[in-house]
Image (cartoon, rainbow, N blue to C red; front, side, top):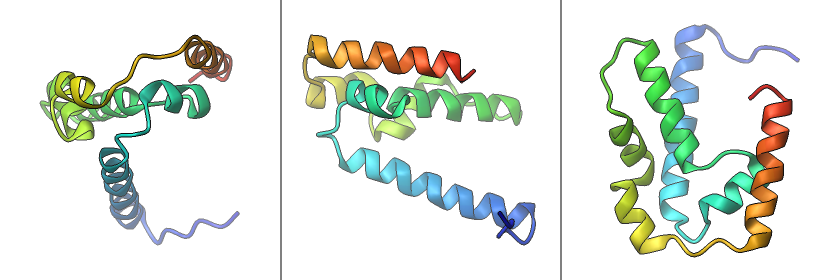
Length: 108
């Protein structure tokens, strides 16, 4: 596999654009529940907000944990939950638990 990025700055710019597109996509698709994202993909909006917070911390940039999640949700997480989150079914919860185990086994 060849590295299509000319340099680190170009790579960072392209990856940042892809991240912004992912965040926009998740904000628009409020019908997709976090429990389903976790169950199928092994991550959800909360994870993305946590990763954003961790990256800011590593870069020495002050970013509150709740603010990082709000950035991903497009609103405060509790408001999103009130407006869009539905009750998780036992099947969804079981799928998510299995996905979390696969994450753990993969060292994620």
